[in-house]
Length: 295
Length: 338
Image (cartoon, chains in turn green, yellow):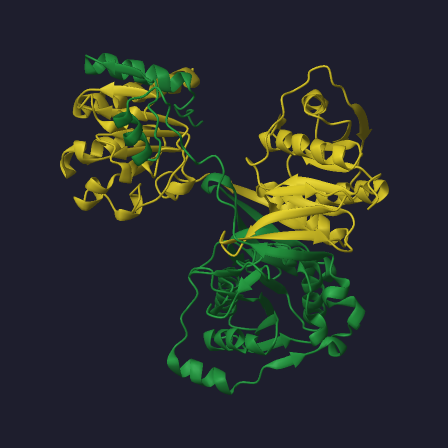
């Protein structure tokens, strides 16, 4: 089975990030570029599925420009068979929706049973592109994927989905399908020889014409949303703490220095350990914390 | 910008219970609708859910669309998308808001993709200017920046709002809403089939996702006593955590550490056993919904945070609690057998 993995190159958000207040944009001069961590996980999952089945190709696809070369070669070094760069000056200003449309056009020209992408990109924090790709390709999508297993007949897969509080849901679905990866294996770190080999591989480059997209269908001209500006985050409101004025200066000082932890007026239990335990158990029961008996 | 299409919010219910985020959406949606001189519509999807309508009306909904079908009782991505996309295409709202919950995160992108429009996820605030243009603000770049977004071409505008941010306005119990029942029909089976549900194992679940945590500190006294913490955690079907003292002493693995150099947790219940409550620890757990502290020292700072303060020797109290809970669950076992 052939697998396509969509990747995006993003600014590394782990390090410090300057914001140009005048231009209302990120000052990207000193920020390294990395593969979006969720997308890197998607590539890792794609490679593991390919290795498990022993057949098929993994193609990484990215919408970008000449700087995306680094991210695509990294994926080739990880073990991807093909790298496809979708680049065209007309693509500039594409929003999440248009990005999805362009990626879907490219993937529709490949023969893929499975399309993988990250749950969201760490820069725009959107999480929209996967859904657009799936909708445009007319295939179903599973989000919040936390584990993939291809069933023996090779036509169906089961997928674990991440729910709240650590719970998981297992869904079964027929191929082809798009999976948005939320939790995955740690991406492999390519060896030096494989990096050298990856430098010699060709990266296929598709422009708008090759994809059959007209200039007015892509880029800022077609985008559904526009970014007005990027600003430093507002400081969190309500965190400023003013201690009550009726306290002694020493107490107020202490409250300020401990981050304003105010004493709760809780009940105090003490005495015979058995009785204390009884009261506590009754309390836990009344609050509904005692586990239900599993039938 | 035309605003006659109205403001729509997608109310979220789980198991027939209206979620808090729905009231936050209705409250915020009402403010936006007033500025756009539009009506606020709420959409409820589920099965036998008309009793949830008044609560939505009290907080500001003018119209409530009730999509009633047993197939919608629980969230089903394909059916919810189909039903909502149809309704939205017919009624052409200006703006559709939903919560950025596990459901909304899945639903909003599907809906936007189906309707061929844009989407702002993780939205933390929206403002309407005099011309009726709505600016959406969301965190980006790993919370190190915030992005302001407007809709250029996309219609309707769709945004998923981060839960817990918008205020819930005081209910007006005299308000009523027009109820529009819709009975969506589904002629196909969903392509995705839920085959299993795996409940999180408290022993292995990440502390940040844990619901109940039993945490031990230096007061436990030694590795020979650590089983008391583990046993209590087991009968409560909860997760074990520790303060730095206990981790440094090697009683428990460092991945279980709560505090400044460990994890920040926010469980429903946090039981601190023999933890004095140094700020380095309390920073990581002070937002727990309910805190029970057990400590020998009645002046321990942890008691300032505790909802229930137990002064006493945990070596005697913990086994007593554990055995009493065991008795209770055992007796319930027996009644079930009969």
